[in-house]
Image (cartoon, rainbow, N blue to C red; front, side, top):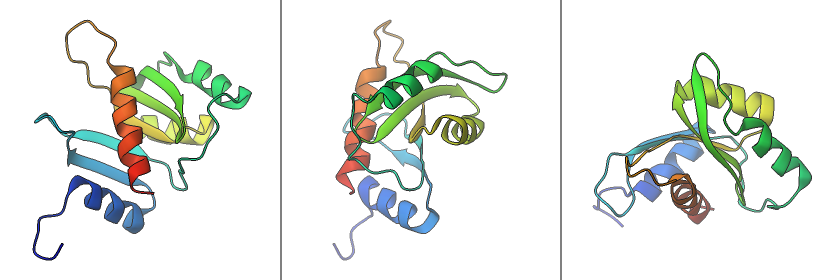
Length: 134
């Protein structure tokens, strides 16, 4: 819309078109919470099969992966490909996980301090937003 502020979705699309891989900062879900930082591998599409042996193997390899620079706190196979939620150096995690494991999306893990496993919900929201733009 002419004259309106860009939405998170429009910033996502513009960043993807401009950069090939995208960094989102400040895009929030419906709740008023700190923005997510998300890195999406170039060529990521939302038409991947969920139950393939390769996708499950990648998920098993990266789940709980620890390096000196980052930790994979949660991972899941989705229609956008494998998604990893990490703590630590997001850029290094993105480089290693996309290059060595073929991960499609790497994002900062957001712990809500409730003791609940919130990774499924966070990944579902990320993938929904990414796939809505395709």
